[in-house]
Amino acid sequence: MSDSLKAMSLGLLILLLISFPTISTEWARMTAELIEEEDDPHYGLPDIWDGKQVVCIHFPQSEAPDGYEQGRKHIDFDGSEFMSDGGWNESGACIGGFSGHDSAWSLMNTAVNATDDAFALNTTQYTFGIMVNSIAGVDPSQMSGNFSGAYWSLYHNGALSMVGVTELELDSDSVITWRVDTW
Amino acid sequence: MLDAHAVAIGPHGMLAINIAMLSLIGWALWRAEQKMSSGSDLILLILLGAFAVSGRVLLDPIPNVQPVTVIVLLAGIHFGAPRAVALAAAVALCSNVLLGHGLWSLYQAVGWSAVGVAGAALSNRLYVDGRMAIGALAALAAVSAFAFDWIVSLSALHSLSSEVFLVYLMAGIPYDLLHAAGNVAFVAWLANPLSEIMTRHVAPPAPMAVRDPVSSRV
Image (cartoon, rainbow over all chains, first blue to last red):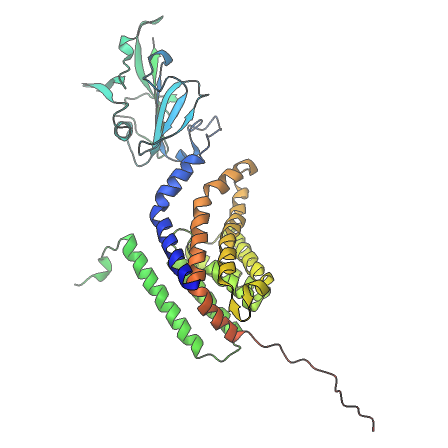
């Protein structure tokens, strides 16, 4: 009993230690809850992203790519989709769990890469900075409706950003949000 | 100039160094114990405390794997609840001087004390006919891991609401599992040798004065 327990317990411990990063990450995703404080920039996001940087992309419901028409999906830093919020009043996805990005452009590119270009950007470089034309193929300039024009606008921690994506400096827990605004 | 201190050691290298140091400390304490006379229970408790503190500090890079829970459990079985509680609180305080002392220290002291008291209460079932019941001890050590972690988690109630607390406990289950697996491994490898050492130093009952049975009447 004692000798077999020695081998078994040591083997189990080593196995657990090797697989611990995966186990703890998956468990955290399984047990994640949505943040309920409305004054928190992370409101409505999974609590495992608390203190982390997040990119949210909200599409007009009628223009949303396949799979993103209803509510909001949550995609972790490694591209794993682990949670969705069908009750969210916008359509799209948030990609989060990032850290260490000083600029919104850096964070945006990392998020796009994490999702294997599912949210690929089409941009135009102007002298004043980069203009985002489309995200995931959704191009507001092609939209029609009861408005003069539409464009992708950038929000930082819930407030409209006064600078472009390349100039926007981030906090360690910034949430940047893209949504289509009209004029 | 040679500058060996500038050598970059990765986390695995550092862990290997820590395990080597813990083995050295354990061997040195074991040799010291062999030179002690039987019944030196208080000195042995100090040596066990030194090993437990060293183990907790040196194994700190491995999440939630440390020998303190099993050592306190064994101390409860062999030396009883009061000494196990003293050992538990002292180990919590001394190790937290290095790892970080705060509100949680009290909860850790209470958690490990509870483990020691459980060991004392169940000693008749865990130490049978002069031998440790290793299977039962391993099971209790695994349960103790969860109990200890949940007692320590109560400290989160100072900053979290009770509704969030259950989520907090759930989120910690992988760490509890690691603690339980570590405890079972420590029981498998350390319980018999430590039990033999402790048995040698359990103080015999103090002699009691008895009424002189010889009648003085003539």
